[in-house]
Length: 133
Image 1 (tube, rainbow, N blue to C red):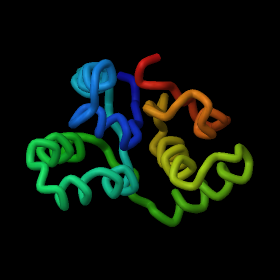
Image 2: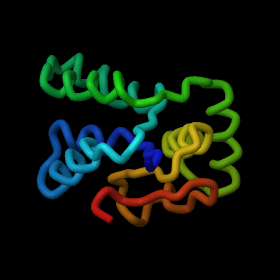
Image 3: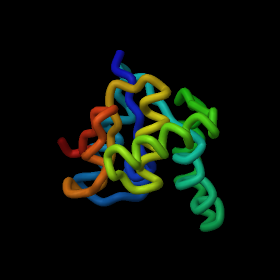
């Protein structure tokens, strides 16, 4: 089973994205051969905004995901690793937190919807791939 860390953009794409992102995100998230990994930062980027906007179907998708995903929750350790990753690879703050959490959770890959030119793709400690390949 592949250990897959999805950033918040993948979850948002599944909940309210447009084609082809939505279909690809749903296909990924329903693949029974994956173990899904997450962190409190992914939760923070998804659930509160959906709750504020009273988007109940979106919240239901997020609840389902977070109920089944394995979360790496050691915030001080994630922060320390993110500082190192950001300094080493020049990755932006939030993306460095996602990469750090993925590394610490022993993910095989981090899946994102970030454009190919973004700094997250400079990660040297984690394989990063775009949702659409």
